[in-house]
Length: 315
Image (tube, rainbow, N blue to C red; front, side, top):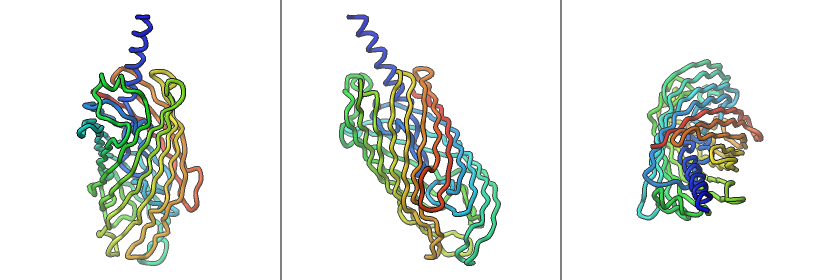
């Protein structure tokens, strides 16, 4: 009996460590990824660089479609995560700085000239940094590691608030940029539903609204404005072993139409994307994971494929 209890404790610790090495939130509306919402112990630090490859017709931030464009982005988002207590509530802070390269070509509709024109651009720099905060609302108390080990898995709900800062690389003479030259505000609710044998399976869901300020530095125009964008993200995750896990991923985006001086740019989004993720815990403090996603169903011109590989170190 004593040996069995010891084995159970070891397995439990490995599962906790697997949760600690979780995927980091993205700096835009293209998806946070699985294992981004579940409760983990407070006073945890996580450093997570990743390589992200995007190919489609979205701007690099993933918040708007450019009809007729071919946009290829290679980004290396660097993310720092810190968990802490907000009174008795769980708190988690994400700070993301995406270093990127951009290769874009398109026959782009210019609403000022009222016609399409061809562009072909390459650029290196950074996308807009983003800071995101999770605050526990239900089933998400502030727990130290020892307390967390004894806490039963159950329904969890967190409030999500984030801000994207207009510090990315931007040139008003270019129609497609790494930065957006505007503030992005995010608000949402995230939920986790553990179920199944030993609750090794979970449905992670988040519903988010993104709001955007005006970009007042636009070539040949006074301003560019984007309508609010709704993003729903779902992940069905499963821990196959204490070290190996996987996820089926889905993301839906709707809205976000762009206009220049009040003239529509024909860029609203109504698209469902899906894919899969696999992760592996290499050592107690080091994990890796990779994922692939693409647009599956759409109403409009949305096209995108995404691959990412990430390493994560907790301390």
